[in-house]
Length: 170
View 1 (cartoon, rainbow, N blue to C red):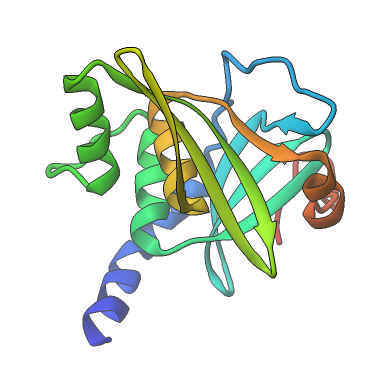
View 2 (cartoon, rainbow, N blue to C red; view 1 turned 90 degrees about the vertical axis):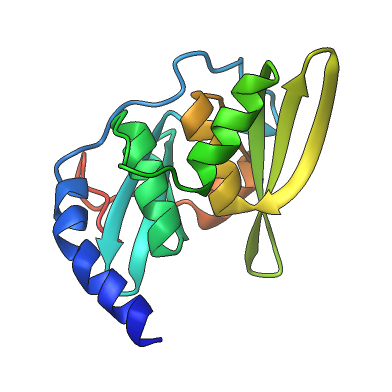
């Protein structure tokens, strides 16, 4: 527990960088279906409750709280930065690349207060969807610049409207 606290404290300067960056996301987003909405921007922020990934779509923001390592992985991928040593998502990206694989998209859902990810991966001529933590699914989608989709019902129920334009403090 002490090591985690030290890690979080050592990451505070890194999180200050998050406040200034909000890269666009989802350049190759497929057309949204009536039941799904494509996330257009992903940002990472530090809140009073820890790191939070913000999924932006249609003027709303869905906050998903994540652990420090996932937040760092997502932010690094958003900024095209690499750490001295690969993190788990970097490793998975490298392995999939080595076998000609890629993340096609992920669908984020909310069940009984817990976010889930359905990560769809293609390797050669096989396409499979894997159950995952929403944070891992988002991280891999960001690493591959793959679309992130949410249900329209999720966006309407969990999506928050920022108080001021361009502001997403939660």
